[in-house]
Length: 498
Image (cartoon, rainbow, N blue to C red; front, side, top):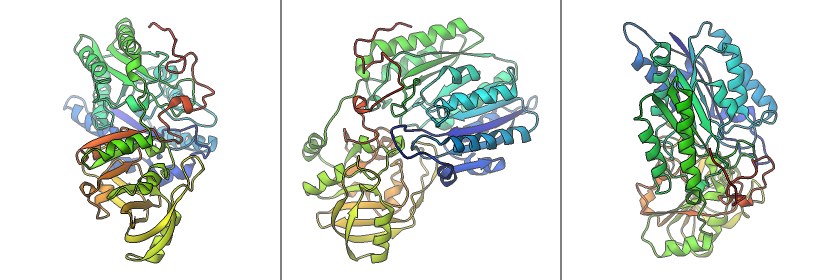
């Protein structure tokens, strides 16, 4: 049996004016054919799980050969341009045609991709894939837990399996699960049947850490369902609030063995729990001053999660609100990372040990604070490439933030300046540059939940800070044009039943 592998992953923040272009994919991941196996088979990503799952399901009686076709990923950013999306799909379907006979296709959409022409971009390419392979070929895949699920995605596939953890530490396992379902389907053992439910609810991103009390009972209920006869899989899609589309919000999936009524019933049960407990999923906001006041009373290290400049949600990575606050309070032994290619070049020209007047951060737009200007000492310069051996959010092991400079003020604010935006998913970002995370009292990580896997082992406390920006956790500050109405928490009196 020949099983194709296709992946197209992008988290599109439609509140960012600048679009995502083909160059963004080329700079991150754009692979065809056997390049995919060489680059991704051994990663913690679901694509690695696809390879492992198919190999593990192969027997002397039936072999499942992975046929890697196309894999593209770009760092979360603005809406994907129409030309870029068309180019990506041309590449995808050219490889599909070149592959010849296939018996099934494993897919890895993100679930929150938006293009200028197709706002439900994942639903669009999955539907086109279905049209090309016909109604009978199984299409089974994974979804990011932040997917904004659409009926088109569900209709195009036999089964979709969402990540079960946030931070996303289970991506490879979910890929294995999808591949195992594919093998059992092709072997004639099962017939996956999927149903979804779409409560009018947007779970606040500040409430989406799956190990916290508001989420644990929901996932426990989902786990208990898996023990029921005929249940193959279920998924909770937390949703991505920074895509202004009608699909924005939280959803659930249930997959059974040829029992649509049971799938619909189970999806309804999960959705009902989410809806009944919707108040538990409303955000709890802590401002900058309150966060720093709390931090002053605590033993370090302390991680301040900069929610308004969540690079993993598409933000620019150069917000200075927390940097200014730390600088003004003269908080010793504090750390922040800023995307600032210009300041990297100036620091490189000065050289380690040199003194320089810099204006760091705040250069992308006017929504993320003014630059921080001061005299800095250039501590060190680095290439900015590092590898993460541990399982961390995102599933990738090799990272490249471009030429990097470490600079420090006399007030002991240490600033990492990068030439590329880099989500703070790995402490190797610091240690590869000679920095010891445990030596700082406060570390700013530009994210919400994704950095927790890396920072929790070294930080005694983590505080999510409601900073301004294109990834503000306060959804009421975002100007939606296309979302569903009514919807909780925007319309608090919304009524719904599955």
